[in-house]
Image (cartoon, each protein chain N blue to C red):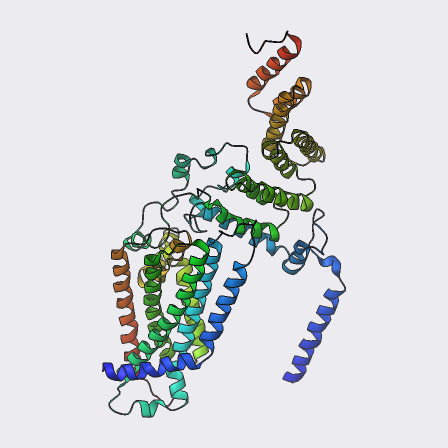
Length: 294
Length: 260
């Protein structure tokens, strides 16, 4: 009887395996995913949606590394900041502003006062002081971000954040661009990645024509997503239009710059300031040229 | 007593290097670490912390497997093979046997730890070009002290549970549970209703806090060594629990029938 039961189980397993083999459409690939021949496609076939869970874990791991291990566990999570601190790096903030210590000290004191002597003593054995990676040690984040991107190629912030650290702190512009291009391959409609690529063209390669095209394309993708009924990130749109306007202004193309600023004014909370910039640009177009030197 | 215990311990140490467990685990640890070390992340060969973290994790897993499985089979194997009867012939008492088995398993685990940490030290130094030996020695010491506690606990389990496999499984669950949630139990307890709150709080204060001996995070993030006083207190804490488990083992083993 046990042998019969084992034989039955074997036949059942074989049948399920054969059924699975003939059903390639079981793949959990989303419409934006690359084909299953790529590494990401293979991972998605093998791991299903669990890969996203692991990708998030590795992304958090990178964040924990950024804070030198001083990071809340799931038990401390309620008292911790909801947004990853690494995300500060992906934005347009200037260097230093993304890791404001006083802000962190307020937010990240998740350990609180020890409840008892055991907890107090236990704090000798794990990182219980807040610090950040600096002086090139930011490179230690990169393996986890890379792994996160491998597991979930649709997690766009992984590419933009890795790119930020690579180009601003580690001087690895080419690697940043390559990684962003991989991200763009997996997410062809990502305006965030296009914007980051534009910044590399503008700030690192000094290729204003390329940057202009990428900003324009990013803005178009943002608008397309908005028109499709999505809820694209307005902050990124503000960044795109502000950077594009600045680029046009530097090139002396004031009408185009005004066009971008008009768009920015629609969505920005600082409408007065932008209105003033528009007036200044109009004055430059209309009024007589101001001599640079007397 | 010491001579008798050391004689028993010598046999256990010989058993460790005759068996393949240590070699397999060490080769696996080395292989996985070296393979991961070969991975190129953004053409930067100075990235080291991920490698240290994974290597230390593998060392911890391997050391726990070696300590738990070696200890769990000691007394049951002697009983099963009936070699316990000649062993317990005078002048060796049951207390000597328990202490000898403990010393043997602890020393054997310590030997394997030295090899593992030497490998870690080489890998880490080769990658980072720095040798923070003091914190490495602290990590090795605390890890070894933790294994004393674990060995004593498993030895008690080997007397209480029917088979080495069930003992190993229960001990692994207990150890991993403490390492993962041990330090959070009190904070969890204060969010619960009575009487669960009191029960969880009692468990928190009663369990041996194995997480004190895990300073991997400090090593991975290149943090300064922990204070020697904290090390000393942790050592005394572990000695207390180890003694408790050993005495409990002896008390249970004293009344245990060897033929059952």
